[in-house]
Length: 381
Image 1: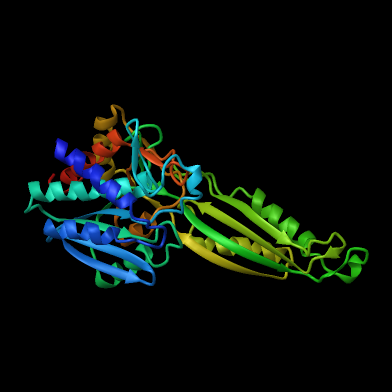
Image 2: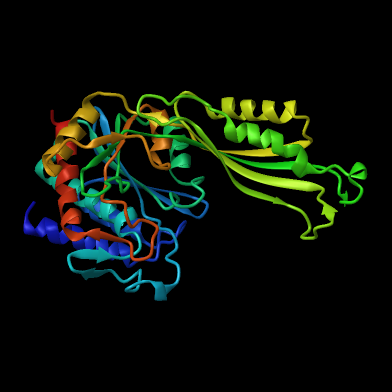
């Protein structure tokens, strides 16, 4: 990549970091990007739902569609004094760019834009379609972002064949890991009802903590499966338990428990809900449970997209990447059900969501050429 492209991706990343787009705010990031892509002959559509901005930008006509997927929102920065520099004033020190969103994922978004501009300039009449989908709701509730856009796409029959998400996937150097799937996530808010009373008269009360413990122990100890392909076994983790008045002589009348399941393709969310509720029923609990389906698992099997990404990353990093389904969730979970094969490629993730979030300037400058190579190999082959 030439010096101009190096300078462009750094300049655009800095512009994006300077915009305080704390989720669900976009703070004008998508408008800035749309102006650039309109000048490159993209068709841009702004899809706003509630407080969330979404941008869909497309170039090309008939044929397969490759979409680059990202987000312009960031997590809160925390106390300014904890940072070495203002988190929303991009700062370069010793070859490293600091700022909230530098790695997650304004650097990747900027690299997407530069790659798209350069690809279209070099191949204005390319086959198929190349597209960019951005949201300002990835770090938040993920209700009015890509989830809602996917509903729109489904209704109008939008064709999506391949998806590359720019989430920071690398572990120690750019290109050392290729994400080929993600686990699903299912959260529960469980309320167990008892009868409040004095601890000296347990026969006149019903302790929901005591009643729930065997059921919770069974759920926590259960071996749900042995894993799936490269996915780890499904896991249930209890994250919060609350009961009582604060007094040590009162049996509480209610217990609240929060737990989450991260699950592989052996399961669908509704199956896990039934399994958990069967345990609660069997233990005779009087309860209510509220489920939140954060997303189903997805997995991209061996095929052209994985093979191409493996070759491109291997050429850059000097060794074949690890191919992983680890980590949390990403917005690709909403795109995969539309029929697209999905992978994730991005910068090193060591500093994401932390104080002094950063990205190597050299890695940032390498990203546009990496993404452009992926686009060319998929659409021009």
